[in-house]
Length: 447
Image (cartoon, rainbow, N blue to C red; front, side, top):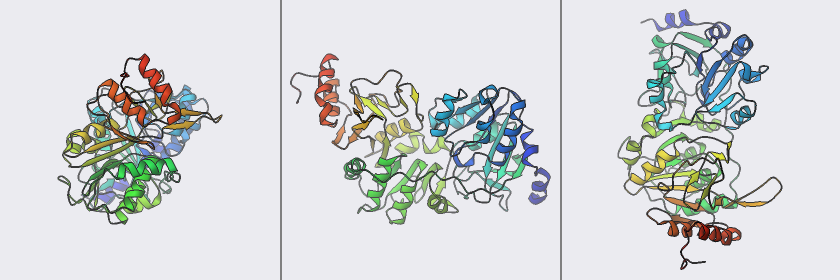
C-alpha cells in the first residue's frame, strides 16, 4: 500500500476536520497529553452554533479552547474519566461532570456501551514507515475508542514521543478518516511534585523499609509516592520491576539509578509496563523509542490478574482521608469532587493477591485549612458525600508519618485501635471517644 498517498488523500485543515462534529454528537477528546490542540481551536470557533455536544476525555493538562466560549454550558458537556484541577473548575461553571469508573474496565465500556463516540479527535506521533500513528504515552483505552468511533481524526504532533508496546499502542492509517497537521506544540508537562516535606519523607522511609529486592512497583501521583521513588533511587534495592497505571518522573529517577531491571518479573520480564504517562520533559524523552518500556491498554495493566501474577507487587497510593472503619476516600472532599477512582482499588486488590505483595495507602495525618486550623485526615466516619474508593475490607497497609499498620483481618475494635495509633496525637483522644460511641472500642484497648 502507498501510505504516503493515503496520507495526502486524508490530509485536511483543522477547520475542515472540525466540521465533522454535529449537534448532539459524542466527541472523544483523547487523554492527557493527547488532547487535541489545532482541531480544538477550530471547533471552538463553531461550537456556539451547535447544541448538546458531549465531550469525553480526562486529566486535562491545559484549558481547551472549547471551555473558553461564551456560555459553554449552553453548548457542551465535558464528561471526564478522571478529573484534574481544570475540570474541577469547570464543574462550578455547570458543564463538567465525572464519569465514575473502574479504570481497568474502560476499554470494555467503549466496546459494549450504547453511547459510542460519533467522532474521536486526538494527538498522535507522526506516521511511521508501516502506516502507524503511535498514541504516545496514552495507550490507556485509545484503541477501544478508535474501534468504536464512527469518525477518527488524528492530529499529528512531531513532538509526541513514540511509546513502544506490546499491543494497542497505535492506529493504522487505513482506520483513520482525517489527518490534521498541527503546529507541533511541546508536549504538555505535568509539573514535578513539590519538594518532599518532612511528613512525605517520614512516610517514604516507612514504606521503603517494607520493599524487598526484586519487587514490582506501582506508584500513584503525588508528593508521597514521589518521595518514595526518590528514596528508592538512593537505596540499596536492586532488580526492581515496574507495572503501573501511570508512569511518573520518579520511575525515570529509579531507572537512571540502576535499580530497575525487571529481571525477576514473572510476566513482561525486563519491561516497564504502563497504561499512560505524564510528567516533565525528562519523562517523555525517557519513554521515546525506549524498548525497555511497554505502553499497554489499561485493561491489561490494571487487571487484577496481571497484577497478582507478579510476585512481591508493591502498590503505593495516596488518600484524601479515611475513617475508623478503614474506609478510604481518595476522590472527594465531602461532595466537592477532586479526582476519580482511577485504578487504586484494582492495585489494592491485585497487590494483596500477589505472592508477597503489599498495598500501601499513605497520607499525612493532618492538614491545615485556609485559616490555619489543624484538621485530622483520620475521621470517626467519612464526611457526608465522601466517596469510598477502597472499602473497609480491602485496605492492607495504612501509613502516616506516625507509623505503619497492617489492617487486614482485624475486627472493628482492633482496626480502630490500629488506625488511631497512626493518627496525630492531638486527635487521638477525640477519635477514641468517637470509637467508643460507635461501639468499636474495646475497654481493654490501649490509650
